[in-house]
Length: 239
Image (tube, rainbow, N blue to C red; front, top):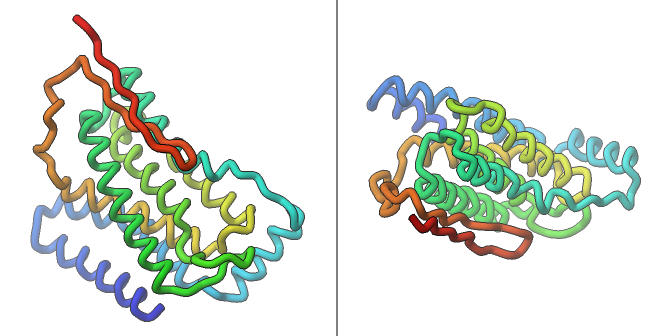
């Protein structure tokens, strides 16, 4: 836990340094966007293994019943991605071309998932239901990563669409706790990692100029994700 705390402090310090050495306006936006996720991570670290989160878990299970389980969190985790591509197909203006959206979605999920799963192996914590690898929540990390991609793409053109992803992400995190799969600290840190990782990707914009399909308007190539299943939707408009 000490190493992880130091990692967070180093990250915050690096953000501060970054703001002093590069474009101030862009860095101020990054710093502003980093306040919420770093606060969530810090809150999760504070609550981790505390009597407060244990009491919360006990209260939730008492209110819902010890046998409560509703697996909607296995599906809401991917809802922001579905919303994004439906918006694209509907012609709603976005920040980037759909290929770039997919590129940043993929990179963001790789980064956030590597961080989360590495921490799961470093920090040995038992789930509320007795299973292993509790901290942080992988479902919540993915949900907030996807939601933050959606937000970055549509925050300027369609705020309702942009924020809808967070509604699905919050639902995912809430049901991870309600279904006795995770503690509140797992969810908070997972959410923070997802948001922070994605905002960093959109800040640095890796492979920014790589888009072989940017000038192609008659091709749609969209990834599809279901529980345990991955694929692609491809369409071509004949002129």
